[in-house]
Amino acid sequence: MRIVLDTNLVVSGSLWRGAPRQVLDAAREHKLYLFTSAILLAELEDVLGRPKFADRLALANVTPHKLLSDYAALTRRVEPASIPSVIKDDADDDLVLACGEAALADAIGSGDRHLLRLKEYRGIPILTANEILARLGQST
Image (cartoon, rainbow, N blue to C red; front, side):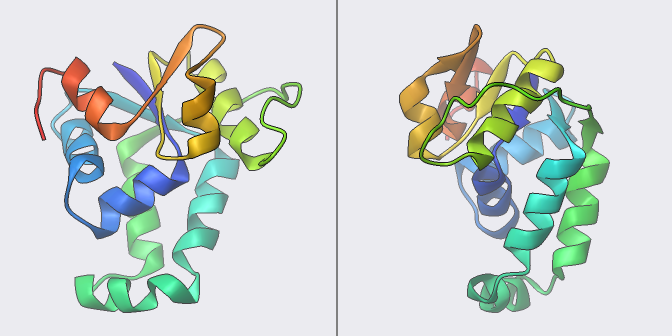
């Protein structure tokens, strides 16, 4: 499976246990392939640097740079084209959709209500981490 993960799933999977972590582990085990773009990596860097994650990063004994580097190494990078606005309430979500299209993704993984409400974009299903794991035949 070719998957694009929204930043919220990457952060959750990097800093906590649970289904998002299992999705990242599946990529490490080559059970699926993760795709991203330069702009999504920049967003991840920005989010990981926010003060609200400082305690969690310290608890995990990891830096934002290390998490970003590890995630970047786990992914394949694509160059998405611009797409017309789809998510009016959060334009950053359009960047995830564009990446999914450029990656010829089998799914987009997200915990974002705007994306999940959309359900699919140009034939690409938008799934929760649990739904991705179910498609892989794994349970949480």
